Length: 397
Image (cartoon, rainbow, N blue to C red; front, side, top):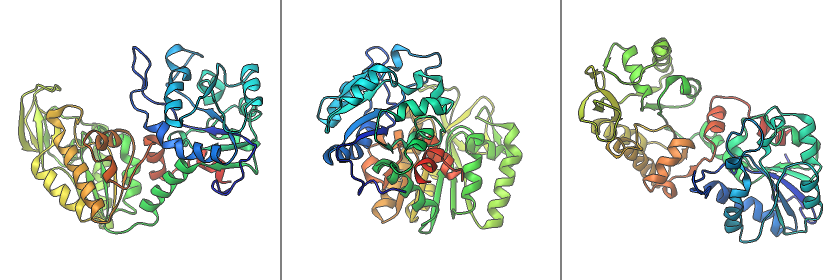
């Protein structure tokens, strides 16, 4: 793969695929969290400081029928200008005459933002002709959008074909890959994987792959109750996937065969309804009465999980321990975040796997006290499932 740091960008128009799919206020379309823009800034500044100009490609939202107001990248223009500290030009299309004219007149040090690539259905279909039209705007291609690396889309994968000797990964993409490899390939032991969230089906592939490398797997969130039911426990109205009961039994069996310790929450904070003002009680996780549901792990689970985490040298976290968005059910997720921060200070490498886990460390103030917070939830999951990510493969080969 071409080395981004040593590549000469002088005088070149650089097509950069970024992931600026940032959350917007529904009424005013203002950015409510710009961390994805800030995460890409080192890559973009390096290109500008080395004599290149930037042509930025991104998607925003999930437009299905062509252009739509709420998904226009014009809404994030001022946010990019704020992070980059310079003006940004905008093309109301990502291909066509307006894009061509603005790109061709771009001077070194200038930035052009193209309109949402997903306004064209050809983008998500990985259409080669659409990718070619995008490629004609620049002299070289940089993919720094790890969050979309698992999608074989025109601007993330096919476009690289047109730059056989001038395609590379940016700093953010490289950091994401390096962090993931530290967990799965350069593992320091003991290695603890923490897997949470609502459904076993969402995480079954990652858990099965982690059985090959982890020493401990902590399971929390709604998915834990499918494991308890599989073992004959009573889970009341807690989340459960009955069609995954056998899957849970097989995971426990394989873990035992491989010497991997599975840790389930011994106690749960339960509620009589899914509400921040529900009545709550603390019970054993396998003895939840009818009409009640587990919405967080209890204090005994928090303590035992924290001990395992703090004694680890590698930690991966993907998925919350409960409904952390509600204060009444946030203590378990917060306790895990705190334990990961302590493990980091003890010298462990700790990777937060995007999505809800990233939101949680941010909410509880631990984002700067862990080794790395991934920007790509879905992409990272697929990497840990052992899948080849097309966006990475396209710039590596």
